[in-house]
Image 1 (cartoon, rainbow, N blue to C red):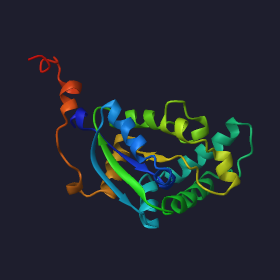
Image 2 (image 1 turned 45 degrees about the vertical axis):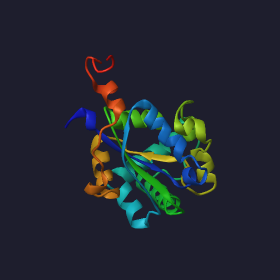
Image 3 (image 1 turned 90 degrees about the vertical axis):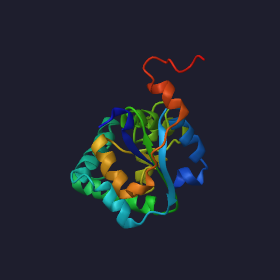
Image 4 (image 1 turned 90 degrees about the horizontal axis):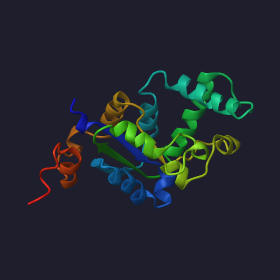
Length: 200
């Protein structure tokens, strides 16, 4: 695969749309040099959200363990200590959350698109995300608050976790003909080896 054409999926979740953060989010990816090659607004179905998260058959257990671990790191008792059950609880909340209103799904392309996007987005829990990230700067939600309210963490965006995951997620959210191949002027600066196209 051409490393300059690595792709990743980003979805602005319902509260990101409701808080009018779409432009702010897009600008962060544009500024770093990624290229937007697909975008659409939809209201996801429960079926789509379920397929999205269960693309990885180990997802329920992984996310369950992650949720339990987050509590333990803070010296707190997790509401459920069975990883699969904890994961199912998270999934149920995510389905309710994602289907609450419109989302904006996007595909971004460029060198290290997946890792760069994850860095820009920040960690899953906004309260522990670094300043400068989307989640660290634009929301203050936490696992504890979400669990207190019996809902999913409102962390503004979804971003693919790996290249393999991105490929599967993109195929789920977009058809091949919705991905636009085109050139940006800025790519000549990012990818021109000698920068010999600047001076006249």
